[in-house]
Length: 259
Image 1 (cartoon, rainbow, N blue to C red):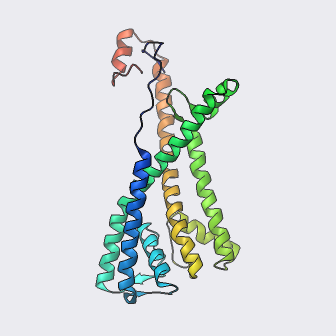
Image 2 (image 1 turned 30 degrees about the horizontal axis):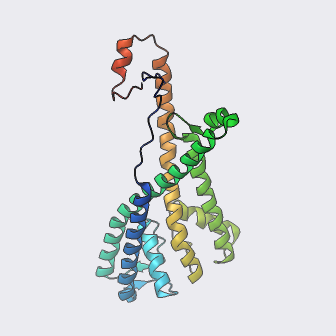
Image 3 (image 1 turned 180 degrees about the vertical axis):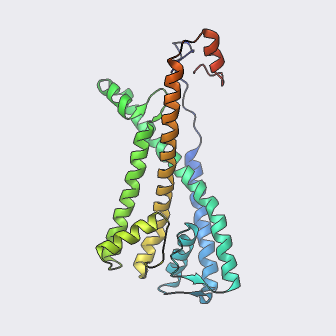
C-alpha cells in the first residue's frame, strides 16, 4: 500500500459504529416479534396440522422454522388466516434476521479485533507473527482468511451439536442425524425428517436460529475473501507500474492519504 500521509500520523483510529447497541435492539425486537408469533399461533393452534407436543414449544418451533425459511412441513397452516399469518411472518422476519446478523457479527468482530490488537501492542516479540497471520494492524481488523475459518468452524460446530442432539434426543440413526442436521443448517428442509419431541423442538428453536445466522455469515465471508483476493491482485499490478506523483495523488480518490 502506498502511503502519502505524514510519518508522524501513520494511521487513522478505527471508527466505532455502536454495534453493541444494535445487537441489543435487534435481540429485543426479535424476542418481541417471536412472542407475537407465539401468541398468534396459540389462539389459532387448532388451524395448524401436524404432530403436536407442547403448544408453546410448538408455536416457538413453528415461528423459528418459518422465519429461517427452513420449512420442514411437519406443522403447516390449514386456514386462510393462518396462511396469511405465515406469509407476513416470514417476510417481516427477514428484516430481523438481517439486523441481528449484521449487529452480532460486528459486535463479535469488534471484541476479537480489539483483543488481538491489544495483544500485539503488549507483546513486541510476537508482533511480526501476529501481524502476518492474524490481523492487519494498519487496517485495524482481522485478516479475511481468519474470519472465513472462524465462520466455517462455527458452522461445523453447529452441525456437530445438531447430530448429537438428534441422535440422543430424537433417537435417529447417526446417518439420519447427520442428514437432518446438514439439511437444517443449510435451510434445505426436505421434510422427510423433522423434530418430533418437545425437547428436540425446544432445542431446534434456538439451534436453527444460530446456525442459520452462522451459515449466512460464512457465505458472506467467502464472497468477501474472493473480492479481497481480486483487490490484492489489482493493487499488486498497480503498484508494480511506474507512476508519477500526480498519478499517485489522482489515485487517492477518497482523499484520505492512502492509495
